[in-house]
Length: 291
Image (cartoon, rainbow, N blue to C red; front, side, top):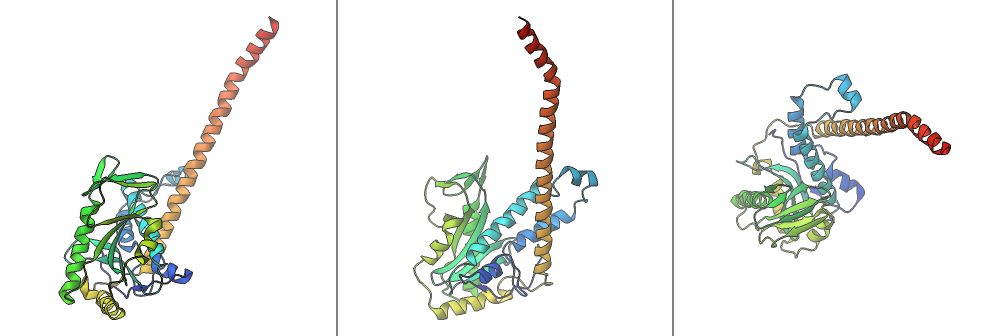
């Protein structure tokens, strides 16, 4: 996973410019929502040979199945980043923070009057989700989302406590992006599972636990790159985001071409069927008329 110098958290503000700044538009020093996923997607995609002219004409996707899952994951993080960018004044929002000594990163970290929240974005659009205390089954697979969320929050709590003893425990949150329903067999004790439309109201509704001075000390600690990973070669967030947007557009264009060919093929099949059966229909009508 690529390493970059981390910048200051983006102060949330319930306004359109701040919403864009906090979610998908990269800043000069910060990381945009979904950046770690975008980095991995582009790394994987960079090893693939380009599509042939015929493949592009027929609408073959530029991404394989695994890369498409990374694309959707990045889109989910950007959607949640957009929501977090509309938090009221008094909240600081961070994205794609790599966790020291692990291969994990936290999708979003929010510091506000109601506490510190590590937020994982998960995308399973248009599905009903059920789950237990340890996992959330997706199709035939039990996904360890709850376990992973607890692990990440524990790691971040330890990182902060090592520098600032007495830091409040980081609260893990799993945000499911626009599912039909969330049906948990039992409400998890340690992890909050919520759908994306309710996230902002839920965060703002938390009981205040930090003073302004405590929040300032915490954000100063989180803003320090050495809290997370030693500074590496800076990346260009704007360049990464531009490449991701171009890839999104290629995927959408390929989907449109496939849909167009499908419609045209269906229309051609219908026409051929009509041409093939019309003589039979005429013969049948003439036969009935002669009787």
